[in-house]
Length: 287
Image 1 (tube, helix red, strand yellow):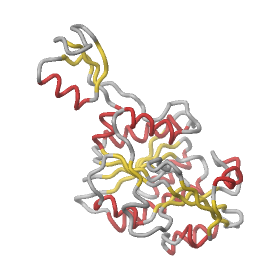
Image 2 (cartoon, rainbow, N blue to C red):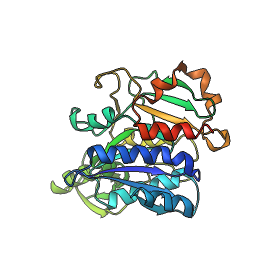
Image 3 (cartoon, rainbow, N blue to C red):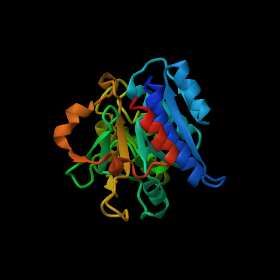
């Protein structure tokens, strides 16, 4: 079973090493010939391209630097590579090994993640915790999505009814999930007009709110998320941390804007799961 980590680098190589060091830890702990963990990273610059290759990942060069377009390109390449699962990560995020390991042990789910995360201000090494109030609203990074959910959401079939069914009359055309299309075709209700369609998970031109819109697309395809950090994980510790650059212009959502929605925590609480190498690197970013 192959897992693809899907991400996009943002022309800030020192920050991107945070996520890449996390990838290196997860790969060393959990990757195997039978369950490989691979990285698919969309990039815009030659420097970011070289950085991804340094860590043994697949770099996908994009013409523009729009986040939505880049994430879609990375996901598409991961699909073509035959990944069975996809883990969505920002280039400034790190997750705990405990949470990653839960991927094998959780009940059967096609779409799950966390609804609580930490933010770290790299300038002052301050930290705070944010938790969504809706029970199953997920943090954008750290989401696990099955191949089935991605194929049914992003690769619909254009079909035409060849038998009347309920409100659908002969000749009516619509799009269906591949699993729905396969079922109705087998029973002679439809013919498939186009099975090679692609609907991006993220709005192609989006620079913000990528998490919200991609989650809505999955929900509308029938994949309601499950937040696992409070119900399934063994502790109430932080399991994903978003590290905010000292240069707030590099952050989609600056640390200062988020403070009113969060509660203060210690730097140690936000980084307990990092390896010694990761922690040492984080401390260099304060300088």
